[in-house]
Image (cartoon, rainbow, N blue to C red; front, side, top):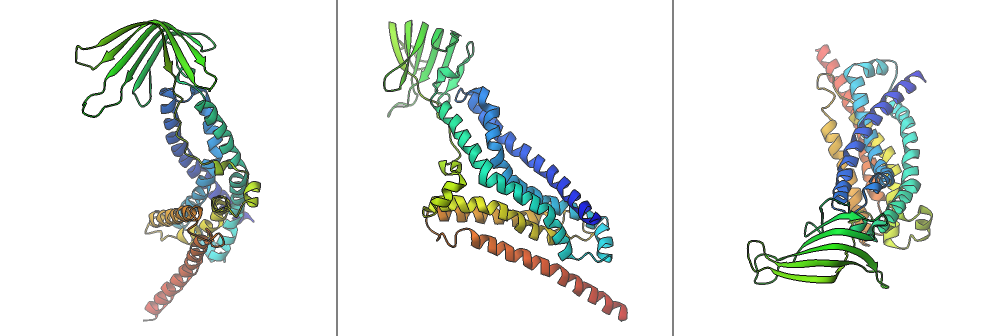
Length: 373
């Protein structure tokens, strides 16, 4: 029991550290993407942390199995390097018994990943999509900050307002610069500039929104050429486009698992269900592979097998994702699904468990023969 607690603590601590680092890296990249969209006025800056919170379960369900895999490799690699595993082996600790002890923390992680994959992650995706729908119904003036030039439409439109009412309906000191599309036979696009003393938003019965400008000018022309056209107007209407938020998640990922169980005849639903079941199963299989791969020679260093092990894990995950895509398109039967991928890597893990003891026995027999000579 003491050895079990010691090994479990080493694995869990290393796994937690590795998972935390991976989570920070992945969430930082995703946060930078959303921050760029907020800077462009595509989404409201106030919902950034809310969006990241909803995406957190989806990140964790992929990070934790990898964190466990690397945690076992690093924790046990250190024990082999410091000859602690040699002492344990002298007391009767076989590789099979080491695997059985490692399955303790792996079972805890299995329950956590199953909860994330089957329940919490779909709920997070559903809430994330609600936020995206709310942001998609907004116009550029719902995210406009008074006193700041704001680039929209990939930089083709620049909008500025000096003041804005609290209900974000009435504006004053409005400036809009918009680049026209390039026309055939013309090298450079023209630019239209609108300035107005004030403006207001109006919602039409069809749901479209317009900015009604009052007392202003419109200038049309090309930069560097003097043939600008200036038009004075009393009232001018501008259609307000909706923000284009790129959704990197599908609606199926937000469907509760109970509904997926009732619609397994659909290839897409079957693929999504098998994917959710695959992530918890991934925990036990990577544990089976990590235990023999963590065995290192103290003279070779603890990182000798780290790169091949990571490549093996990436191959596992890549084939699993490819099989998921094939299953969604109906190229694989639902009965075969993703299970053949797990079977292949389960066999690889079992082969590694048998290979290491055989290699040690051959090495010991060779040493004995050398002494006898």
